[in-house]
Image 1 (cartoon, rainbow, N blue to C red):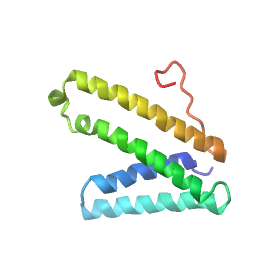
Image 2: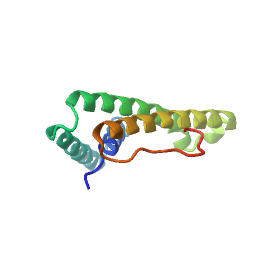
Image 3: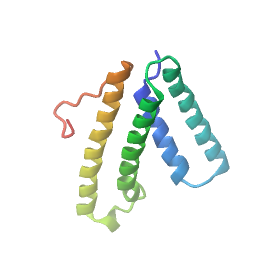
Image 4: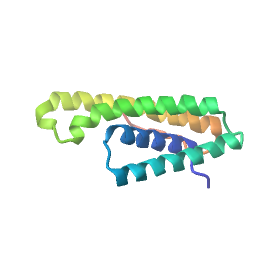
Length: 130
């Protein structure tokens, strides 16, 4: 089975954010760059086979990068254990925003699956983001 394009684009956008935001440890940077290149090669197979266009890849990449960056920004202080500094009200507000943005992310990925016909749409049942 071919690895789904929506997953490749999503994972590549997250690796891109890690490369840009996590500083430079040469060994880890090298591994992240390799992972980014591997995802890019797998993505390029879809355009080479005519499954989708470069314009579609660029549009979806930009959308996923943007939404994953928003989620990253909302999670950053929480991930670093700063809940006490933020307060429970702010942590709750961010959790709701993260859920909302993740719903947008799932929608983008479902659009990709619907267009290319490879992968599975994420269907939420009895879930706040449905």
